[in-house]
Length: 194
Image (cartoon, rainbow, N blue to C red; front, top):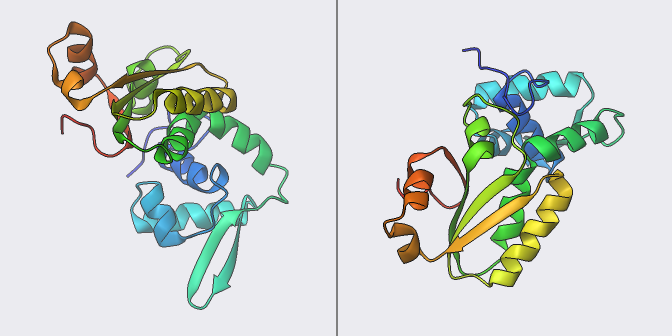
């Protein structure tokens, strides 16, 4: 099945390819093909084909550990650093926010909403100017804002956190009704209305 090029960066063949590259190039992790498929939310055969293409292009490298193939970015390739920069802007808000927010206690869930989430979900429109993130729970507010500032620097877009308790998120509100009915992408945990 052919997938569309991602709206945030049509330079990639598919949204799956962009997610796969993000899993390897933005985190610096070394992953098995099975773990790459899981991180990129791809079927194993699709991930296997993409990894083979990217290995052939020299963008990824691999090493064998027993029967397991471990895949990582090939930092010797002149393409890796420019790809990292593009990916930071395109998928970085999701990948880097997940990493930053995971270390903060008291977060029950977090998700992207607004225009950035809409483009990630495939809804058309102009390129988003900022990233809206909803954080639910009772985290250290300063820690959340500091994490968002670090992400903002990395992704070259303002990152706007809204921090609410789960009870506050469930309250009637025009703004929250709009958030709950609009496009969203989970960063930590599940989307609270699913």
